[in-house]
Amino acid sequence: MIVVMLATSYLLVFSEVESSSSTQLSSAILITVDQSGKGDYKKIQDAIDAVPSNNSQHVFILVKPGVYTEKIVVPADKPFITISGRKPANNTIITGNDYGDIFKSPTFTVFASDFMARYITIQNTYGTGAKAVALRVEGDRVAFLGCRIKSHQDTLLDDVGRHYYKNCYIEGDTDFICGNGASLFEKCHLHSLSQANGAITAQHRQSSQENTGFTFVGCKITGVKSAILGRPWGAYARVVFSQSYMSSVILPNGWEDWNDPSRQMTSYFAEYKCYGPGASSDKRVNWLRTLSSEDAVPYLKESIMGPKSWVRSKPTHLAPLSKASISTSFQKQRSSP
Image 1: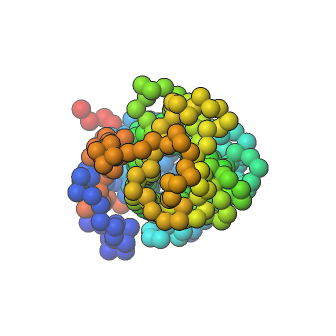
Image 2 (image 1 turned 90 degrees about the horizontal axis):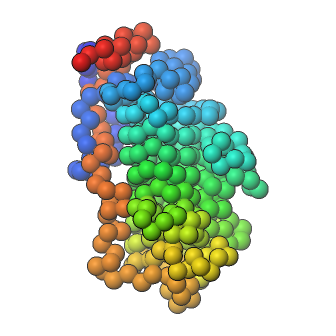
Image 3 (image 1 turned 120 degrees about the horizontal axis):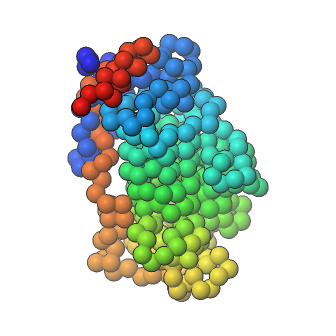
């Protein structure tokens, strides 16, 4: 396979500096999605489908600006895919409006491991009154950088696996970050659309033996009216907010027990060095955990999800391929020892 330098026009995709701990991705196959017909495919799902099962090569799917009305699934047998738009994320929008079933309604579902998304908007426009998931993540070692994730109820089903969200905007009104992932949210903007007391998080940890939970570091919380930080979907729910700004949208009590007082003893909700008008601890629930500087250390880095060595940095070389050569190249990859 001939590897060529990335065209200058694509450099904007990688203008954000990544952590030095991220895995170097020196080369990747480039697939372009363009609704105008000037790319390899017009639909994002078609580009994903072109990647062979049990793929072991990094594939970079560049999605040109536009609104893509699709129901996307990244299958478990197609790892090492990156889907990227161009900054800002609202230039490239993936939209749907399914509702009802938390597992069937998502606009975008990730089952594959080692998946990444950059600078895309994923939204579910159904509205209020039913579960309407925008993004479901069930793969391991999955990262979203600079993305926008929007809906109302259960916006982000952070379901299973280790996940990393950085510089993302996440919007909803009821339990809009939910699930049982082991996930770090770094420098994300959480915006509550709730008109009255909606929960931002609903973590689903069901046993003290599960190494899962949501950690928010350096985030910003805004909203329309009033919201709480979270409630325990699972009896052993674990959520920690650290060094994050909380606007007045956050109610003084901060947390609820989902009408089950027994969960006050088993859930793990904590705040550390948060600030802003909604961060006052004076009227917080009396079962909120108090963290010392030493206690907070595991929640200030990637301990909840393990080292971020699997978070890929920008490729230095891409190989743009036509539809025909994509198939040929992948066939060679699959037949090689």
